[in-house]
Length: 225
Ligand code: ADP
Ligand code: MG
Image (cartoon, rainbow, N blue to C red):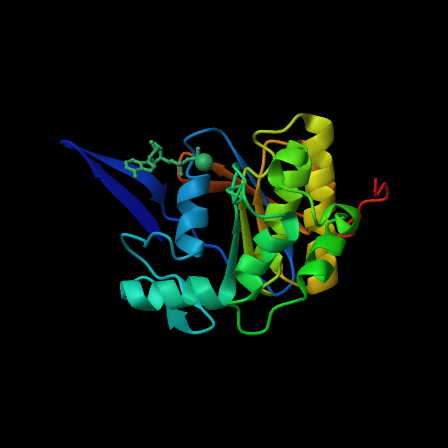
């Protein structure tokens, strides 16, 4: 699969021929320098963007030629996103932020169960401004997993956090992956997640330059809540 962005007179080859299959329930960590194509790949996997050539199939459906409507339906029914910035609604509590999704999802978790899974059972009635950055990101994770997506895509979820807080967020993602079975892809610079992953994929200059599978995935041992 390739992705080319026309930019003025030049063509930016963001992805030059990436072949990748994601397996049900696995936790994949994606590493790579800035500009290597990580976000482009994640956005295409999530139906936020489409490939220029090649195929991207989700359970037999090709997303590459899909209409905007079909992509919207794919995202709504199957995909959860977590980004660097939490995008919580400031006037709603943690629970209400999650409910904004569970009220419209087809088979959601209870908002309380989603928040419990990320260690925020005691903070459900706090507003975003009353939560730390790491806690806000965990609310965003609870919101993303509460609709039980088949695929959870996380683009630098720890990018705005110090490394100790970032590890808590990654542990929350690993735990959510283990307990819900949601196939999870995490882009991060935090190498400490690598041993929590089933597979580590490295992108360089629009190509997969490395792939390592952990024979025995180590789940986090220090759950800090
Ligand atoms: P990463 O997430 O690994 O930092 P990106 O996927 O964001 O990398 O970008 C890969 C390449 O594609 C970069 O050269 C970037 O400048 C380019 N690119 C990404 N998005 C666009 C866009 N919308 N228009 C033009 N070029 C883009
Ligand atoms: Mg990026």
